[in-house]
Length: 59
Image 1 (tube, rainbow, N blue to C red):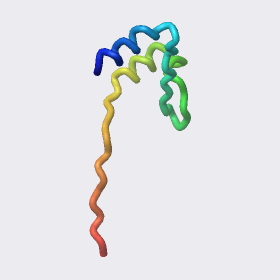
Image 2 (cartoon, helix red, strand yellow):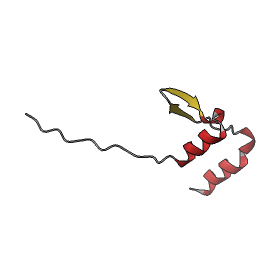
Image 3 (tube, one colour):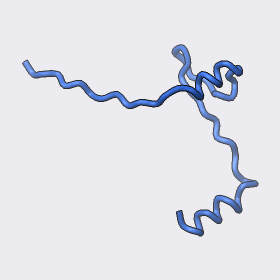
Image 4 (cartoon, helix red, strand yellow):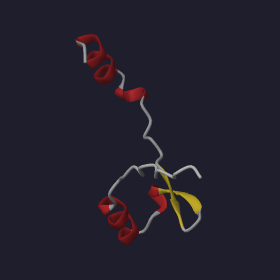
């Protein structure tokens, strides 16, 4: 990160807004800010992963 980029991030904090994070829960999307304490802890403990495509042999 360049010094100019660092200055932009620190100088404009009064204009910044919090980022609303949404996640899928039980088939619908919901903002994390509305989670109760237990659900927030569960979300924090989640592990992210990427599924690998499976190889299907051609017939």
